[in-house]
Every structure is written in C-alpha cells, then in structure tokens.
Image (cartoon, rainbow, N blue to C red; front, top):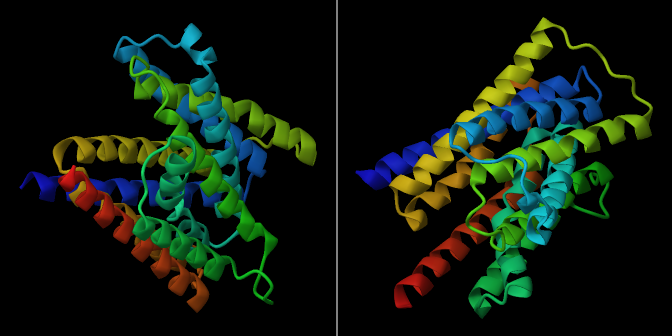
Length: 289
C-alpha cells in the first residue's frame, strides 16, 4: 500500500512540474525570457525562504560559500536558464523528452567524478540513452534546430547539480539549497535581459496569475516528490518520474497545439527505456550488496 501511495505521489509530482512548465512557457510568450527567469527565481526563492525559516533554518550562513554549495548553485543556475529557454523556444514535448536523460547523465557523472562503480550494462544503457537524445535532436538533418541544444545543455547543468549535491554537507537542508539555488537565478535573468536589451514589462493580472500557477504547482510538485521518496521504496516509485513526459506531450498538444514528430516520440521512448533499465540494474546491484 505504501508503494502505491508513493507511486501516486510521484505521478502527482510529475504532473505538478509539467503544469509549472506549461505556465512558464505561456509566460514566455508575453514577457522576455530573462524577465521570466527573474520572476521564477524571485518567486521560488521567496517560497523556499519562508519554508526554510519555518523549519528554523538560517538563510545567511557561511555554508553558502562552501565550494560544493557554490558549484551546486552555479549548476542550478545554468540548468534552469537553459531549461526555461528550451521550453520557451522549442516544443514542450521535445524539451521534456531530452530532459528525461538527466538520470542517465547523473549516473555518468557519478561514475566519472565520484568514483561510483558502473558496470558495462549500465554503461551500455547510458550510451543508448544518449543515442535517444541524438534521435530527438537529429543533428545534420533538415529538422535540426540549434535551439534544441538548449535542452541538452540543461541536462548537463541539472545533472551536475545532482552530482555535486552529494558532496554538500548533510547539515545543510534541502530548503536552504532550494532557496539559494533559486536566488542565484535572479541576477542571471537580469543579466540576460541586459544582454538582449529587452526592457522589463509590467505583468498584467493574467500573467501574474500564470506566475502564481507556476510557483504553486512547482512547490506542490516538490512536496509531492519528497513525500513519494519518503513513503515508498525508491526503486519502485522512481520509474514513475518518466510520466512527466506523458504529461508534457498531452499539455503541448492540448494547450500549445504542438504535435510531437516521430523522432521525438522514438527518441523519447529510447531515453525512457534506457533509464528504466538503468534503474533496474541499480536495484539488482543494491540487492546483491
């Protein structure tokens, strides 16, 4: 029963994140991308700052200058900039399909930089998953768009964030990390606006509601994710992360009239299959140890 509840919470979390992406993409149709980044960073930082203070966490601490924390914030900044840009400028399903390669990239990073043992089967799954990304991006063809590389860059940034997080001292809470991570996006968004020469626009009531929706569903998704990881077995519930791609395809079709082409569907299926196989191998390895 706990695994069922955990699985349902994981699906709910992915639905929340997909709806957050929907609102961000809708906002980017009316406001400069740099301004959207600034607003998302400000909103996220405020929400998680309140949650951190409610837990009794300190927001101003020397811990923010630790190399692992600095590296994590920089990775979060890069990953967020690239992913928000990707969902703003490319089809939602395509960006989300590429994003599904993040767990594979984390496994790759853990093997290369943390010395974790990865057998030849998981190495093969990683390579196959990267082939899936290439199928989605399809470089060298008429359908290739350089903008699709934004999602690839976001995978690198977010995977680096997850790998570096393992080096962050346990005394630093997830709420503190989330607050600092979102706060680091604010100057990046302002800098992007300055580079692009895009003037800030005053959001109207509808756009403010969209921002509130993005923050609300994003926060709800975050809490559902935490609840899922605490209730069920990680190996059982983690595969349900990939339901985010299903929600992205449905939202892209229903809200933005985007129909994913066969390359996105085939490549996404290859990425998901590789990720599921990697999770299965990790579960078997954990049982043997």
